[in-house]
Image 1 (spheres, helix red, strand yellow):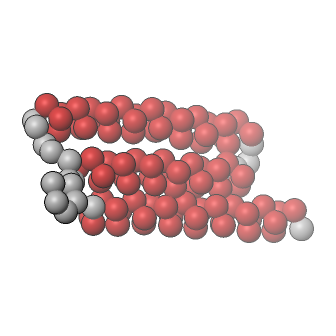
Image 2: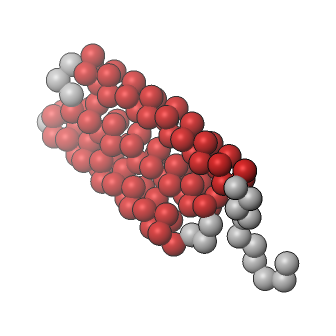
Length: 104
């Protein structure tokens, strides 16, 4: 019974994570400039990876494996934030202007 409940919770978390990955990909393809694309991609993908990692950690055979999965997620968060910052700084130095609406 507990195994079935943990499987359902794990599957739900993984599907929710995949939906966040899909949302990040759609944001990357649809948003107008580099800054909004970076925001959509890093926020959605970080949350998606966290949900999938949590789902995998629930199904892991030992608590050490689950801890390693969560540690990998933390390292991915740091790497993603660093890469996003570097890309945004390069765009700013290259004088890429943010997208503006209407009358400006």
